[in-house]
Length: 99
Picture 1: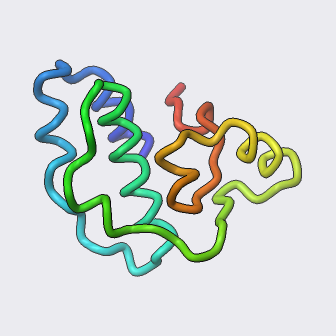
Picture 2: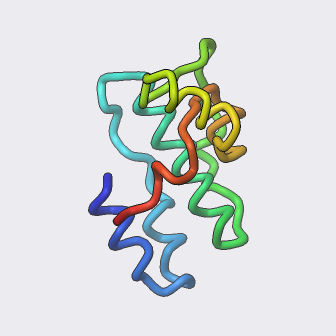
């Protein structure tokens, strides 16, 4: 995922939509499938666009914290991007930055 985020950042904005259009194959874990939908919507929104249609059907019934330490949970509750919060995935925005 980190490699994709790094490469995505360097793509011209006008070609990024194509990178997000196709629905990825299931990972075998609903949490990560929803995470990918949230990430896709989040990236599209940062470029001033809506997410592709496939992201709309993915959400969790119970909150999930991918980074599940006390500090990470507090940070995620305060700083999770909207695309993640509305799907029940709590991850702080800085966790999505690639070094």
